[in-house]
Length: 113
Image (cartoon, rainbow, N blue to C red; front, side, top):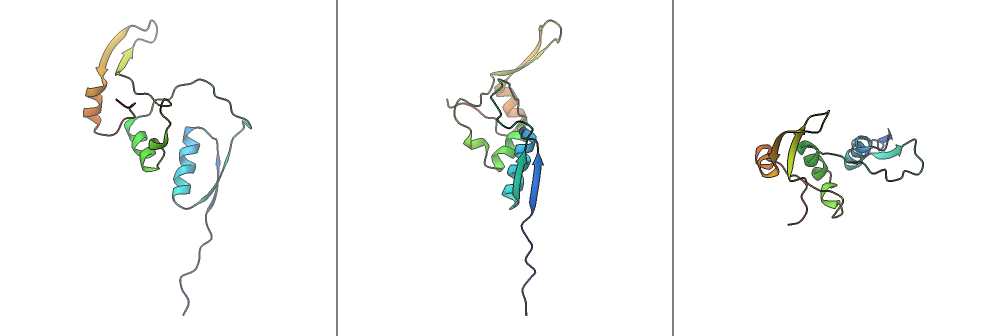
């Protein structure tokens, strides 16, 4: 009597080392796949950009074990959400973070108090 057939480990190539490609790679690795990530930049440099993560994204990053490994100072949480006019930057509406956190009922990355 033989056991179940042994499946070879899934090998996946992910093209693009942006936030989507790296999260895809992390999820595939967590599922047991061998993953290679390709990007057109051979030596990526910090470019000074900002990335806003929605509550669902922070849930996924926590489940993948990535969110809690962010070094202090690499992620900040704003005090509020602001809606501004595109042409002159005038403030239209402001919602404090405490109201947002209660409404979405999920973890938001916050610096230590």
